[in-house]
Image (tube, rainbow, N blue to C red; front, side, top):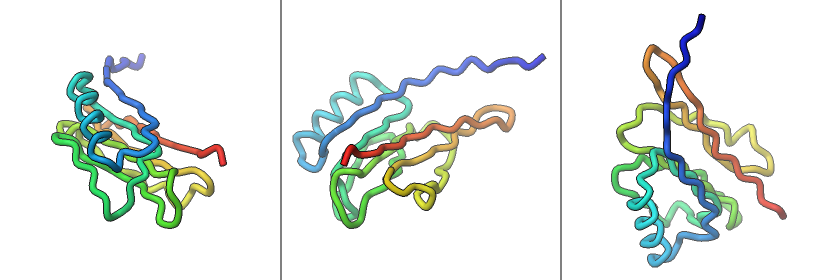
Length: 120
């Protein structure tokens, strides 16, 4: 008989429709502080390589679009979580996203998918 692991994660999912300006980043920071999520999924960040996203105590994995705005995604995990990103961008055609493989006890893993497909 397989014993199930009882894991609980707080996950915050946002469709930001831009977090480029400082006021939206301040609102995001307050939301994170008040909810204390383990994992944050942010779609439509509108960020590019020249625009940083800093969230204290979180590792940030981004998939910014190079030639258009609006489909960018970010997956943020607490620094206390152990794991790694799985590269899926080459598999996606019209979508954007990230996959984080979380390391659990006894060599088990759990994958968190953050996929975004725009309406256009």
